[in-house]
Length: 180
Image 1: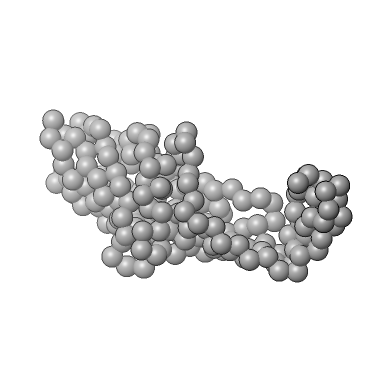
Image 2 (image 1 turned 90 degrees about the vertical axis):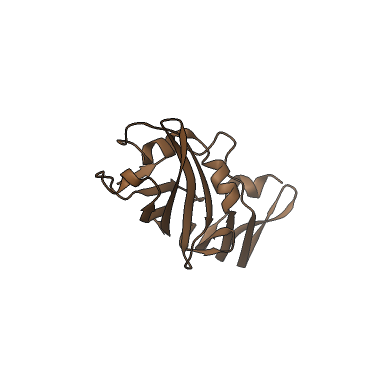
């Protein structure tokens, strides 16, 4: 099962964006020279796990994760470094009959067709999870890049998810050439 969800109304903060551009062709515009195209753009987008968790801090995603399990309420989640490279742990708790019970999910991080996906590999916490037909989940965060750029990979570094991106024969937006 893949669960798509909405980002918080405050959006998603990126901790750092590193971009290398080579073979830039400049055009003369009303305010001087501006980039028109580039042979290659290559970069990394660093998203802090704390920022990602804050952006996902809506009840809908977690409610969808726990859908079908009756009696669970007020889920709270955080994202922390996983035990292996390329993994993130979802750590949190849910309320069951007035008691907070911890839950943990180990996930593998991937990027497929502009979706940052956290695929659950292990669920722990609620004793009743093992007895219920709960299907491991994939959380999929849709991401969009300007036309001509694509995500080429994802990894994890302490406290961060790092996406790589690339574009060849990239055309800068026409309005970038005419305004500055």
